Amino acid sequence: MPFAPPRVCGCGHVVPYGQLCGCQKRAAAERKKRFDLKRPSARERGYTAEWETERRKYLSANPNCARCGQPANVVDHIQPHKGNQRLFWNRANWQALCRTCHNSHKQREERGHGHA
Image (cartoon, rainbow, N blue to C red; front, side):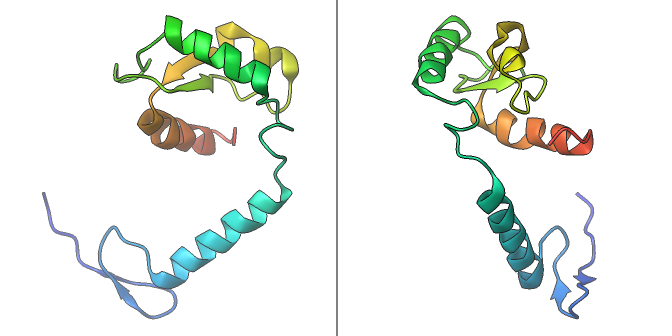
């Protein structure tokens, strides 16, 4: 693996390659906190007891991650539903994912394509 030199953050601190400066970590935490204050709760977004029941059934029928084959524990909406209940409940729009694939690869794709 090639070695990359450290970089200088906008605040003036030298930061090792691939890491965030303390000021960047604080800014990201503040940004996420502001977002979470405006975001509706999971229940308000449709993740009700009925969803939990259907989620368990779907994972029983689809126990492996659609991406990596590991045990799945998340039912992901392939196309983000954005509150659209028809899309939310459309099983053709569901896929079983492991947490790693859902929380990293899938979320990165959605941010990159402007879906998030």
